[in-house]
Length: 112
Image 1: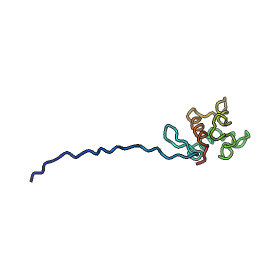
Image 2: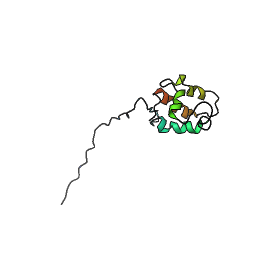
Image 3: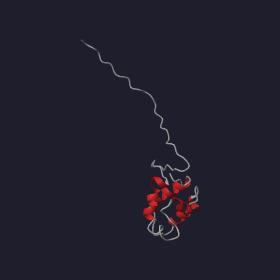
Image 4: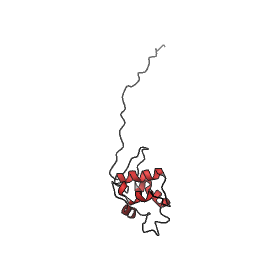
């Protein structure tokens, strides 16, 4: 038995990408990762600031509610956390970490 083969048609549907949902307490930087306190910033603050600002220094960087005392949500330029990091501070964030903190503050400094 002979059955002729025919080309299979290629679908022509267009796929339109949809942006991931965000909220006031999350930042989605250009890399696509969501930045929040629980989503990674807690670890950055603990690593870079926690050894001094967990037991001394008048600022507890290990607790979200305490870090918020140095943050002006929506306004990183007027947030003490950013101002101190732009100075010659011993627990200096990398440029990428500082940008994450700035993005986080710009979008409300959310916990989760």
